[in-house]
Amino acid sequence: MKIKLEEIKDKYVSLGIAEKNVDYALNAVKAGTKKDFIMKNLTSDIRKVDKATANNMLDEMFAANGGEFKYENRGGYLYSTFYLIAIVGLGVVTFYFSKENRSMQFKFGGALLLFIVLFFRTFIPTIRGRFRE
Image (cartoon, rainbow, N blue to C red; front, side):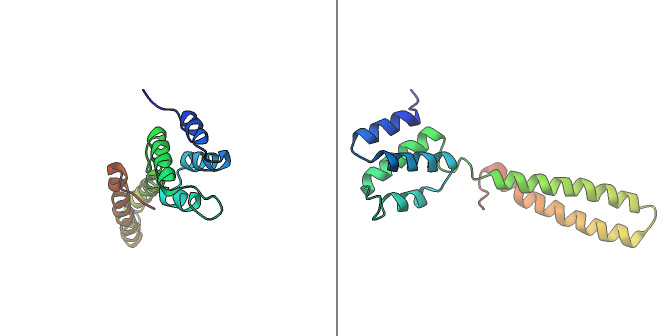
């Protein structure tokens, strides 16, 4: 049985946590904010949520939302896509200059090689789920 975020909200509001604090935590979890940052804000002097209660609430919310690092690899896919487009474009230009000008072919080939290295340095960690911005 999968627990919904609204059920978690109702549970912690009934435990005495102010609804605005639970709403803040819920929206922050949905937005993919890091747990440490949310925890710091919840336990601040203004919100005054108990540290143990806030930790349990955030653990439940992140579990229901798909995990703390659910959105972490978005940048990796974005950069990988950019590098792949650059590789294709430079590949076409490099092969176009292969017939006309050797020095331009060498320059574009070097840039192509650089983007291939950048692509693999970004794409492999992203696939493994380890890309962090």
